[in-house]
Image 1 (cartoon, one colour):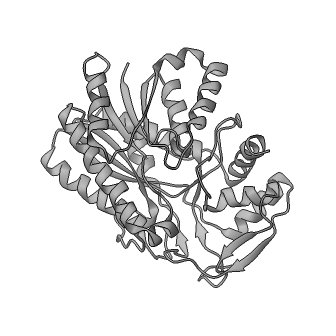
Image 2: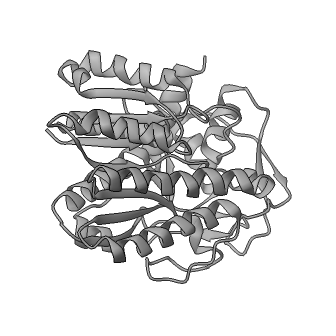
Amino acid sequence: MQTILLTGGAGYIGSHLCLSLLKDGYQVVVLDSFINSYPNSLKKLIGLLNKKYPNCIKNLYIFEGDLRNLQVINNIFSEFYKSENYIKAVIHLAGLKYVEESVKNPLSYWETNVVGTVNLLKAMSNYDCKKLIFSSSASIYGETNKILRENDPIKPTNPYSKTKYAVEQILQDFSVQKRDWSFIILRYFNPIGAHYSGIIGDKCKGKNKNIFPTINDVALGLKNELKIFGDDWDTLDGTCIRDYIHIMDLVDGHLAALDSALNESSLFSVFNLGTGHGTSVKELIKTFEKVNRIKIPFSIAPRRDGDVSFLVADASKALIYLNWKTKYNLEDMCRDGWNWYKQNNT
């Protein structure tokens, strides 16, 4: 059995990925600071495991700690290094993630996202762990009006995306020195939706400022309306276009990347994870309304700092090299996301 360290494992992506890793027979070590996530997310996960996959529970280990503390990471690696199930690979999801917040407080983003990753690499080096999957972001591409490929120009427009690209550069530099390591960078587009069970989903501390949780808030009556930030963008209906991807498709992308990294002794690759289909804010609202039969009132607000008009993936490289492609459509995302939200917020 191979042991995987999952940083940020209590978060939205982390909790879903943790479930799939355990189902696939991995031993999973979760490290989370719970700055943006709740321990209850993992309790929900454990409840789901008990119900459907009880034999997996014994293979889950949970640690609370911050990547900015190198000793915390070293202690975890040391604990498993002494056993035959030492940590074989790391899937690094942990980090701060809100564009608007990063503009207001850039220092915390640089410290958490970049310093935390440097500490993680130091600990991996100390304990002979040579496989890393990194959670990056499509936001590093910046402003564009075309479908994006991995070799397109990088033009981050805000501190959040700058920290993501900085980590990519660190990993690239590190890979030159560590030629027997495998690094895979996954550039996410816009994950939404939830596990079909309705037990785990997108639950974070504070106000989740992403669009889909806000739509759910309006649908549940917790907010009067959705604010659309600008209707004068250079798009067909004037609202921003994004590539929305079902969380379970994103999880499958990680599993494919992990399999590749574990089977390659030397690797540095970058992959977009998206559907290749752009959806405007207004189109997302209409689809949610159609699928869930709920009206979503909205109003137009000024543009936000750091936003761009168009972010859509060309994910053909992932299909060629990882044999990965998406299975779910936008209706599935809206249905599953609302199914989870209404069960866990009423």
